[in-house]
Length: 170
Image 1: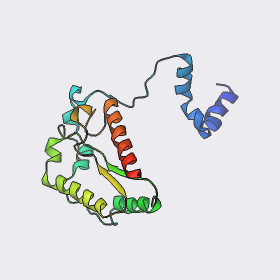
Image 2: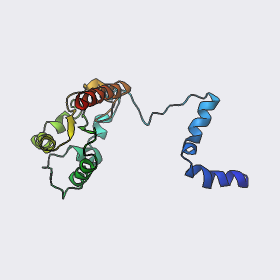
Image 3: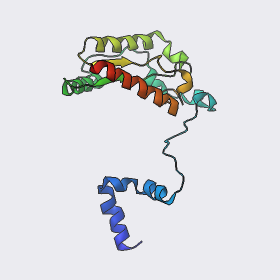
Image 4: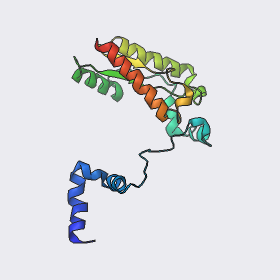
């Protein structure tokens, strides 16, 4: 590699946002087919081993049945408060993403999990912010796993959010 190439790679490209996508752009210009997908976007029911994978700790902790602390001592609540404060008087929508209720049936049907959902809904009910709970609003065939969606699922999500923003902006 020449000195100029090395200099561009190490000093210039990282500082220019456009060049962070240089490999993607080179392939696009050359006509080489590429995917921008980050993972396997097939419907969850077509994936072998997914149920077993989702039993691992890093996935299970997102479905905790332990009672949520809804005070500002909880960093998530603290930062939500800060976000809502900064977004005051702006057309901002906060939404709780849907979960694949069929795949995660055992976890989402736990009493504690359901109570936590109610706590979140109640928290936003008393806030001066637009909030939408999407649980149960997107069918299980639109999920690629426990929370991520297929392209059709993301289209549905976009439509739901767009409609909600239209309704709440009036």
